[in-house]
Image (tube, rainbow, N blue to C red; front, side, top):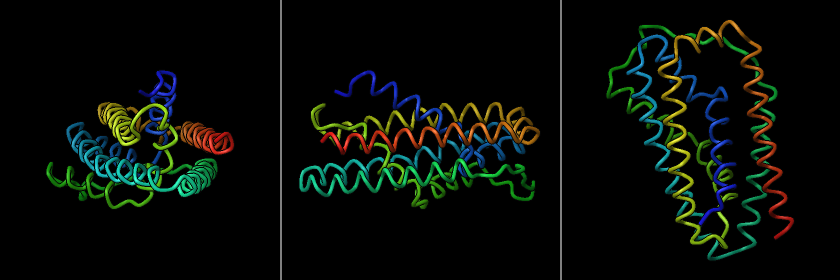
Length: 210
């Protein structure tokens, strides 16, 4: 069983990462702001459906690595730590931008749902991020690793559904706020960067104490 304090840390990190400006939540925001809440919710459901694929891939892959090679898993965590630092650098160096789109780009409900799935499943960065993010909260001493990964993945999906769903419902206000306040985008990116650095350090510390 994953300790409560680890779950709380995981949930807080997931919320902050969900709020940080990125391709997925920006797409949800723009579609919702331009066309309505329903469109944003459909995209969100599609994105969360795609996360199930990534969770399954990480769960089966990480469990196999745990069972076959401790050295390989340590190498995986080091790579994950470096990737998280790379994400932190991108977040800290990100520039502000306008949220623009055209009504000519409006998609139907099924198309929006499918777009969400395709955007998520075909994005290798999501796979790498899950591979770097989820395993650090899964410790063999707390039980079967595969079960822990699935549990963490479902929690992340739940948080994403709530956060992105909230963005969809508040899209008009959020869209105006981010467009009119470049500082808000900078602060959100800095928060995300700090979270990435913290997660990377957690990985390094974990490897060093192993």
